[in-house]
Image (cartoon, rainbow, N blue to C red):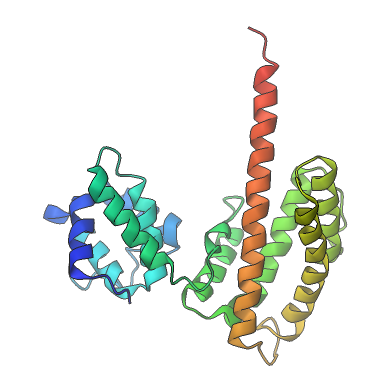
Length: 263
């Protein structure tokens, strides 16, 4: 459960306009959808996890603050701040500080990078399982699903870049092809970044072994907490960087296409 203090809760309730059971301008449907997209949680789940104080949006949000750990509550608050245009600047800044304090305790700081690249149900389910295990501070339980996510992620990036591959090609070899493409297209700006990506090839080779022999993928003796946490942090940080690289590349392509439009 989170450790939100009374004064912090009051500021958040003021900012999110929670009087009368409301939360900002959300409807029940849009609020449920927003919470799920932000945290992977279903605030209207059949088990009534967040309904023990009542059914309104505000009461469910207060219950969410009580039930969920700091970093999950902080993630939701941080995302909700983006919906508060026109709010009092001082109050908004105070609430941003609250969100940052709560998120500072996240076991994997770049977990937000683990998001599905498509709306396919299987990938959404996979992503939610990875995030749920890490949010529960059980990185050992996330290793096999995280490996599957990375395989899917790299394959999709290769498809986007027109890199042909055999589905039997192991993760580390496929990543090597992807890294070469990024470098050849000028998306890696420094020798150090390229060296880190090169080292990721051998790292992902080792990840194959962890998945097969030290995760819940099979009847294995699971890797210890600290090493599992190290692996999850390293992999999520790499995915965040690649997301940023691809976002810049997509923007550059869009800008070039726009410049080529005759007026």
